[in-house]
Length: 368
Ligand code: BGC
Image (cartoon, rainbow, N blue to C red; front, side, top):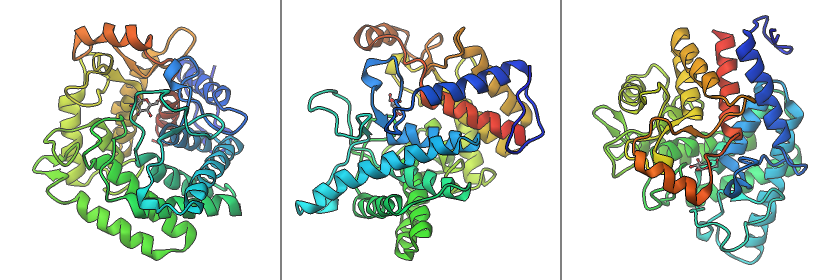
């Protein structure tokens, strides 16, 4: 059976890809709360929240596949949530720079109950990613009403006030550092807001962060590095090229970075790890990062490489087509798989963000 892209392409996929595309769209649809929020994973107890990071990529994937209303509902959810919390803090006279907005909210947009999770919450990348996704949504025909634009303005003010602070990275780690991929989301988010809101001062702020990105704190002799106190790479550095475009995919700074990611972070199974030394469930091979790798290969015109990533992901799906967060068959630390499993349960499956990134890769393959 083949799936024909209704909205754009004459291309068709083979049965495996068609099946996983269809299932992935259903997983996103089913994982969307009536509020518009996307749950990170419906079956994993500690992921019963809406992360702006995960959700923005889910909305992006929905938009790519013509599910405009789904994406719109997510953006309305974020707008309501942001206005509720930023509005309240501002009313009580607190400066935005003093705020530490959370990375995740309940599915109805509240802060999680105090003490609910031990996991760190102050991360700026989700807010930058949201602003970027919002502009993309508009570029694809989405309509941004007054409430959404007001929320975008407040979010931009918040980032303007906080973007020089260290914060936890997209993996919720190393909260005292400046993270290279987080900086990329801030550059892209502030630039998107500058355009959406007609506020050029936000572009100036983004330019300052761009300069920081290219300073020795983030760019070494062999490309970009994970954070300002690390010589290593992290697969999230691929974000600099895609989708945030702070550097072109074939820029030597990016190709050098990607070369290191390919050499150091490809696991024995062929999937991509987060970074060397990752102990979370032993530090296995991640679905969403392998999709990112394939997306990047596609951007370089390497159809074979992109296809290889898609095949790897398709083989990683469970019998019902669900995609986990990571595969733990070939971990970096074999003795760390069991303690995480005992504490939190099996790896989160299906992870909506994994499905979203597979959809992004499938879309990129269709364009090659
Ligand atoms: C990951 C985050 C992700 C969250 C929800 C965490 O384990 O490190 O990147 O946003 O799970 O999927």
